[in-house]
Amino acid sequence: MPKMTLTHFEAALLFAFFTSIVFGVVSHGDDRNRWRYGLKCFAYFLVALFGIGWLMYLGHG
Image (cartoon, rainbow, N blue to C red; front, side, top):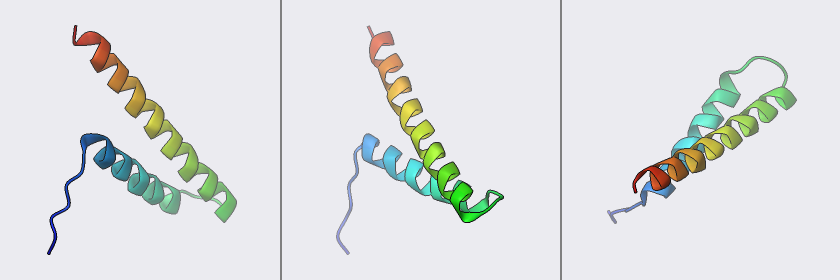
Protein backbone atom coordinates (compact mmCIF):
# COMPACT_ATOMS: atom_id res chain seq x y z
CA MET A 1 0.00 0.00 0.00
CA PRO A 2 1.44 3.41 -0.92
CA LYS A 3 2.29 5.72 1.93
CA MET A 4 0.46 9.04 2.03
CA THR A 5 2.31 12.03 3.38
CA LEU A 6 0.41 15.20 4.17
CA THR A 7 1.64 18.59 5.19
CA HIS A 8 0.27 20.12 8.34
CA PHE A 9 -1.90 22.46 6.26
CA GLU A 10 -3.37 19.61 4.19
CA ALA A 11 -4.12 17.61 7.33
CA ALA A 12 -5.83 20.63 8.90
CA LEU A 13 -7.93 21.14 5.75
CA LEU A 14 -9.00 17.49 5.76
CA PHE A 15 -9.89 17.73 9.45
CA ALA A 16 -11.92 20.89 8.82
CA PHE A 17 -13.69 19.30 5.84
CA PHE A 18 -14.69 16.06 7.53
CA THR A 19 -15.59 17.71 10.84
CA SER A 20 -17.81 20.20 9.02
CA ILE A 21 -19.55 17.33 7.24
CA VAL A 22 -20.26 15.65 10.58
CA PHE A 23 -21.48 18.91 12.13
CA GLY A 24 -23.77 19.48 9.15
CA VAL A 25 -25.19 15.96 9.30
CA VAL A 26 -25.95 15.96 13.02
CA SER A 27 -27.44 19.47 13.11
CA HIS A 28 -31.19 19.96 13.30
CA GLY A 29 -33.41 21.44 10.66
CA ASP A 30 -34.05 20.85 7.00
CA ASP A 31 -31.45 19.98 4.38
CA ARG A 32 -30.84 23.58 3.32
CA ASN A 33 -30.03 24.62 6.89
CA ARG A 34 -27.72 21.60 7.30
CA TRP A 35 -25.79 22.53 4.16
CA ARG A 36 -25.57 26.12 5.29
CA TYR A 37 -24.37 25.15 8.78
CA GLY A 38 -21.77 22.73 7.38
CA LEU A 39 -20.39 25.38 5.03
CA LYS A 40 -20.39 27.96 7.81
CA CYS A 41 -18.46 25.58 10.07
CA PHE A 42 -15.93 24.94 7.30
CA ALA A 43 -15.47 28.68 6.80
CA TYR A 44 -14.99 29.17 10.55
CA PHE A 45 -12.38 26.40 10.59
CA LEU A 46 -10.50 28.07 7.72
CA VAL A 47 -10.60 31.48 9.42
CA ALA A 48 -9.31 29.91 12.63
CA LEU A 49 -6.63 27.99 10.73
CA PHE A 50 -5.26 31.09 9.02
CA GLY A 51 -5.75 33.31 12.07
CA ILE A 52 -3.90 31.00 14.44
CA GLY A 53 -1.25 30.40 11.79
CA TRP A 54 -0.59 34.14 11.48
CA LEU A 55 -0.52 34.56 15.25
CA MET A 56 2.07 31.80 15.49
CA TYR A 57 4.08 33.36 12.66
CA LEU A 58 4.04 36.82 14.20
CA GLY A 59 4.65 35.56 17.72
CA HIS A 60 7.59 33.42 16.70
CA GLY A 61 9.85 36.39 16.47
